[in-house]
Image (cartoon, rainbow, N blue to C red; front, side):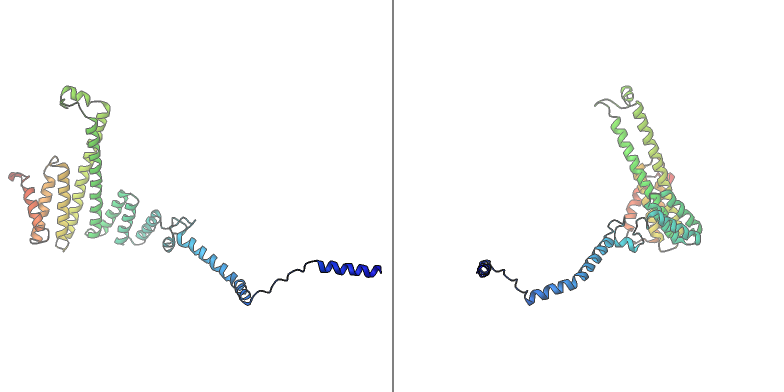
Length: 293
């Protein structure tokens, strides 16, 4: 009796407990999708890593370079194609072949990029000793000289403006009067006058040097198709000097410009710049007394 009652009780408890729901089997579409995903996961990870690495290389992240362009130029780790290294390379090239004119010109351009005009000029002068009539060398040298003159022209203009601002005298008072001179004779004004005077001297000397450089070009180009253009360049730099300094340094610049224009008109009397050259030549001739022509 007791055993039967216990069995009946266990049967009732089993019937009272709720049955657990069995999880439905995944559909064939889900099985196919996850199977493919697992199968290709490693390939995707490899591709992502490759793209990430290429991005670092292409854009130069963390390398000190500017990207793939620097890599192609041998500059992945920075400094590989720096100006100093290129200068060294060109110097070695010249040492190996002292008659390599293009190597001199290239080295000079690198010096200019590094703001070393003195070295650039020295390099071109060495090239000119190898080939005294090489127009590429002489033109490059003349351009540097003219650039230096124009830079010093700006320096002088700045010094003059600073001096003028410091020497302001009260309205109605003559700067050359006793009081006016007293107001402008302080140490600072004297220092500014000296600076302006020095800048003017350096500028005029630089323009003379530039004119001489273009005279070398014109002489080397004499009798060649480039001569007419070199005469125009010579006249141009001489006129720039005249416009800056006037005739305070004499009539040398004027005579240089006149001779250059006359030579140009002889070479190309009907050239593109002939009309302008004739007009400018007339104006220049008027600046010189007939007795000095």
